[in-house]
Length: 434
Ligand SMILES: Nc1ncnc2c1ncn2[C@@H]1O[C@H](COP(=O)(O)OP(=O)(O)OP(=O)(O)O)[C@@H](O)[C@H]1O
Ligand SMILES: [Mg+2]
Image (tube, rainbow, N blue to C red):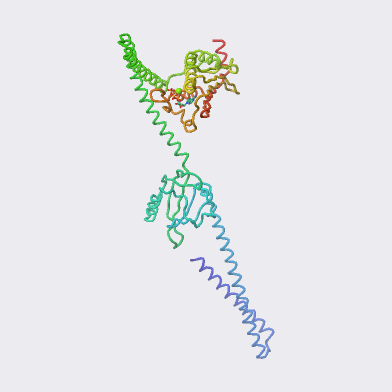
């Protein structure tokens, strides 16, 4: 403690100096003024001198100690402010707790991340540990006690409200002077990072699945076509209605396989688009006409209103645009009962032109709605839906720089909304003057 020793040395030296000065001054006064004083006067004079020098010394010591104390307090306050400032400025949640998991320190990011105010949590037992992670923390504490810091581990912590979420955690030993060993837990919220990583893995999986599917579909395409021709030939040598019914079932199965293979090829194919300015209203009208027989056979009412899209050009691949419309129309047709309604309308907003396909069919539950664009998601029975229709539709819209959304009320109906960017003026002129 060099500072303490310095303090006492200063106090002693200054006290000796003060006493010497008092004594010297007194001697001077005594020699000058009390040269002929009697014994009693001299006696009182010595007593007064003793009292005066003691008082002066006591006063000096008190002042000195007080001054030093104030200085130390100011130093302490400054270093406390610095320590708190550093703690609060730290981007992650910093929590200090003892071996019984009693919280000793809790910074502002910890308040924000876990929802517990500092004043409430200090002294309480660590409340953010999810039950399944208790054994893990015990293991971490043992490791830290044996001198090994736990660094950058991914785990879960539970906020005051809501579900446990992913955090990156470091646990370090912390000891204040000769006090007991405590634990410094530093965590940061990595939900976003984990979400991205999962998405990347999903994309990776889908990409390899897509490649595999494309290869498989390619190999199946020709044998399926051959099988369909064979069934057609067999039908010509039919031997009775029972045989015909079996054949029809085989044919239906083969048709679905062919449809599935075609969808897979559409979904996985990476083909250069042949984009040209297209009048959206014209494309919609031609597809509506093409779709009419299917509509009539199911006794459904289809209304088409292209007034808002008339003369509006989009730069698009005509085949892809037709695929998009057919996909949305067949979904609507599958959803409505006989006598149901489907409305196909053009819509126009600044910079975009698009269309809506709405129906008054079964609608989609909220739980299903968030999955409808995922490849292979279908609620149709096996052999009926591939679950690729909307995935293909979304690919088409994305490739054209547009947007697609599905709104639905279960039991009331569904609306698919597509918006595409309007073709720029130069592209439009190409259409008029080819
Ligand atoms: N208009 C709609 N009304 C009700 N449900 C719909 C509608 N459009 C889509 N869905 C739901 O979204 C799911 C996925 O649609 P998607 O077009 O991708 O595949 P699918 O229609 O099941 O199969 P496929 O298109 O090969 O026939 C459907 O199974 C259905 O549950
Ligand atoms: Mg579909």
